[in-house]
Structures are given as structure tokens and as C-alpha cells.
Length: 104
Image (cartoon, rainbow, N blue to C red; front, side, top):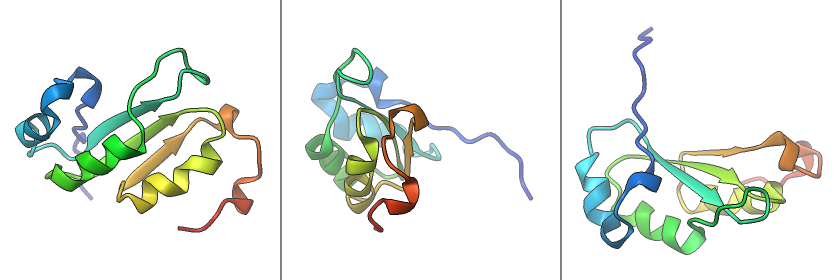
């Protein structure tokens, strides 16, 4: 089993006017890390579902969506349905039992 580090560049450091080109530049990465922030759970506001859907359509590597949002159990399935390979949430932002989350 290989224990090599995985490379997951964050789109927060990308030129948002050129997201297709920016994802093409990192085609040799393992993941594209997408920070989704709602300006409630964390003070910043970043990308949402429409932008993640557009990135998914052009990304040469799988998306790793990091949801820093309130009520992530409501939103996480949608990011998985958009094609995100990984969807990570903060446990302290969750309000319900993960066993009751909708299956995707």
C-alpha cells in the first residue's frame, strides 16, 4: 500500500474569472479542494452549488468539497449529487443524527 501524500490544491487561491483554466493547470493533482463557506458558520462567503457544478463540468480531477456551512446535513447530498468525490462537513455544524441524512 502506497503512503504517498495526496495533493489537493485549493480553489480559494485561484483566479475566479478563469476557473476552467485554473483547474486545467492542476490536472496532475489528486483532488481539487473546494471550500464552500456560507457567511454564517464561518464569516467568509465563497462558492455555492452552481459554481461547484460548473467546476465539476471542467475539472480534470475529482472535487473534494469542504462545507463550512450551517446545516450541512441539508446541503451535503446535493454536492455529492453534483459529482463531488468527497464531501467533508464540520461535526459541530450538524444539528441532526447523520444516520438520518438522505442517501445519495
